[in-house]
Length: 42
Image 1 (cartoon, rainbow, N blue to C red):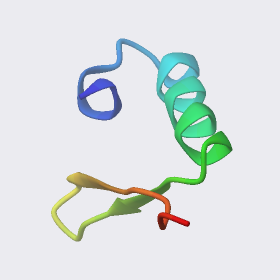
Image 2: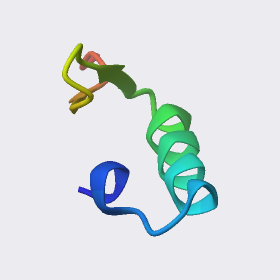
Image 3: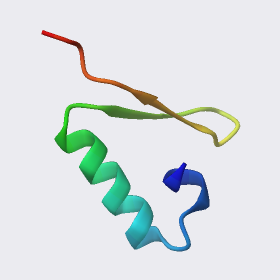
Image 4: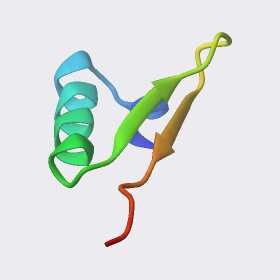
């Protein structure tokens, strides 16, 4: 997953923006892990 293996913050932020642009949400766990919540289907 790009969020955990991104070489820099710019790459990580680009991934977050693109996921959010299609309606997904990024949730960061207490342990620092990330989960992706897909958009609700119509």
